[in-house]
Image 1 (cartoon, rainbow, N blue to C red):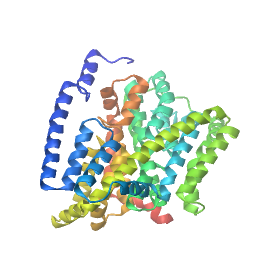
Image 2: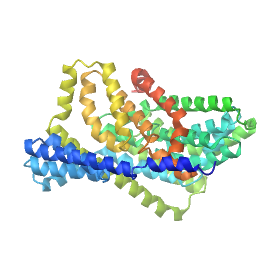
Image 3: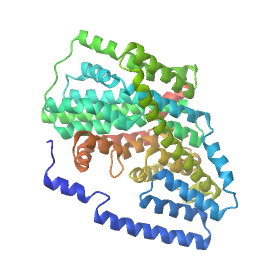
Image 4: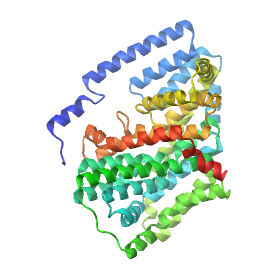
Length: 469
């Protein structure tokens, strides 16, 4: 299965955004958005103008941060009396928040840990404990993804680090390639839910909630999702009678646990320190960097001084990208506030007697659609200010709302056309994008079922933070 059939390649090529049909559809949609821009200027409606300009830019292929910036600056220039130089201060104020300092530190800590042999140690650990049951290698890979996600906080990095080792190993043991790729591509999405999670930090800053509570709230749903994905792997492996690995001895299990011990210190110290009140989430991010350096240089000894320039440059690039999106999205949210759009939506929903259950359905449908076209950070900073006031009026816990949004982003990571994990897995294995999408479908269904449970059983998200805080 190293190469796809000619027919599959044709189908994949036909469904790419750059195909003639895709370009024609984009041109039509851009034309409609431009009509909306002209109409908005005619009736002097800033709310309509900012959305019409935003979608025009997005459909034209501009990055989300640039699109947000153009839409916001043009709308403020033509519809308000605010001097443009004052916007510089507003942009700085949007980033001048202490919890946001955790982002560059967690990004750096993740890069420090992933530069060493952490992934291999976690795989050896999980394989020693569960590798002998049906689908054991896949289950070991899923739990390794969960553990690695608690270190790196990045879904694509998780797919690369774990998938680069586990996918070839599964294929060599007689597992089908789609089975191997689908399980790891989906499990990699755990990186944005299991703490430390950058999307949860962004949500906390956007709607002024506790980062510590959100981190705690992500643990039980993360375990639920990882267990559900493992169950799907078990069922499929048992049905197809995949080869089982040899059961590890007690000595091997103890050795694998000892080898992975220091790799597991980061999530334990971060979560334990926040809960114990020893340090804030931001301070825990800085401590994580120190732990990563000490473990990599002096304990594992697989991190070299020559690796640091690349680690720092990669971390700076990722942080700059995230902060650029956050800054532009906060400016966009400022316009929404000026136009009272969130409040208008809240009043409209309340006036129509939309109940909590129906509103949660609307949220999930909206987030599912948005997840097809937007990356997690942008989706939070744009939609959270709109959904938050309505949720508060309907009595939905803000921590619960944050977890619902984050799990929806997990779905977006493994659904085209912007499912980043699909592209990473496709590039890693050489499988066409549509083949990877089909391969991930059984595990995606499990994620959606978990999303429904998490949405309508708030205790899954709120039990642990309510117990500890």
